[in-house]
Amino acid sequence: MYRSFLKRWIDCTVSSCFLILLFPLLLLLVVLLCLSMRSVHLFFLQRRCGLKGKVFRIIKFRSMSDVTDVSGRLLPNEKRITRIGRLLRSTSLDELPQLINVYYLRFHLNLLEFYLHLFQILHLALKLIYHDFHLL
Image 1 (cartoon, one colour):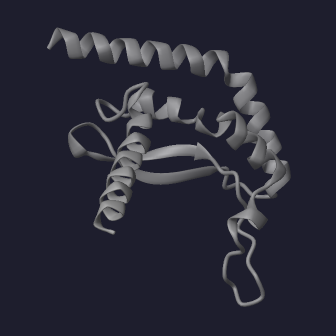
Image 2 (image 1 turned 90 degrees about the horizontal axis):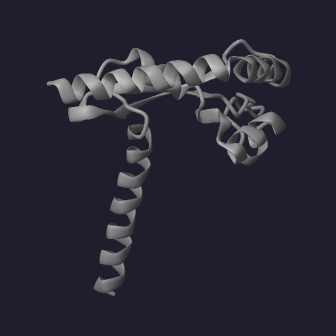
């Protein structure tokens, strides 16, 4: 019990400190995104599995616009990504709003857990590829 409380306290304290320290950068990114996308929808939300399989929403900065072709379908990702979005992705600055998740979502996400989802997908993909190649 004390161990989970201490871990939660450390996660909240560290994420709060980072949010305070990075606030000027976050504010600058918000302004740049507003200017580049001409939209108020600055965040990308997606459902993910957290601790004990509980579903929560991750928060990331949007890096793509909602540009559509004449028939109303979204353009390919390469054509929708903005210059600031490309910069955000290459520097992983699009991940910064996840600190908000660490602070506000109680026992659903910690500082390292939001990377676990990626590793789980890669592990399953490699397992499937390995299995498929051995069937040939």
